[in-house]
Image (cartoon, rainbow, N blue to C red; front, side, top):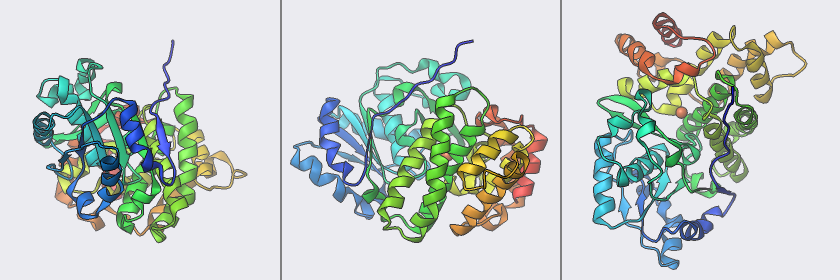
Length: 382
Ligand SMILES: [Fe+2]
């Protein structure tokens, strides 16, 4: 049986990479991009990195910020109205996962009819998405989601996190400049960084054959293990920030192979308990890694080495250690270890189980996950 691998997005990276933004816009014929960014970015003054460059290049970029921290389909409809009202010809996402996902959803709606629910990947919606999507340029200001190189946008539709997935939603260029992540507070650095770690780890152990994704995931794990704590402890450490941006992008490149049960629970935790996505993954990952050990021992042993385990240890020892190393990293970053310490209530568990089971990510988990398994995993992490 034939398999498919593709190496995706053009990535411009390094200190000062943002200066290439006008050139990247021109390269794809974007002369009036809708700048999609959240209010936090505006308040943090992060547009100072972008606005003068656009102005110097004579590029007018009307700004759209009217969407929630976990954007909804209704937010995307407001976005497409702004796109049309402003006569935009392209979309420029600047921000964390919410801004970058919103940028993709708006770009999709330019030539695709609402409602967005019809493009739900879990219901085969990808088949309805054509290449007729305007150019998207993405500039991340967090190192976590990797949405800048991903093919999916995650929107809350009818109270459920819904994944819309298509290669046509990929950015024409992603610009990774560590200077833009310097101002992130320690908690956001830690939580988003744990999201990136989870992407690499879940992709590496996911079912399916994808040697390209595997190699990228192992490299991503190494970069994150070596740099996440540094970036949390000293936000101005530009080298650590740059490595985290790469680790984050690599995670999202790798998860074209698939994710796993940890993301299914995380996708339930955000709408039910309001948990930050990265924190949600961090809270669940060691428990899910232990659960997967019997199905993915050799891979977890390899991942453990990338995360710092001694390669001379036996495979079972290293596979066992993997969950502990992940736990150590989150503790070193100052994150809580239990769902109950992060505002999750016991009475939420039935709803979490139901939503996690309905989420598509666990389809590629190396060990099949039943309703009873999800209940056990969530109780263990509680
Ligand atoms: Fe994620």
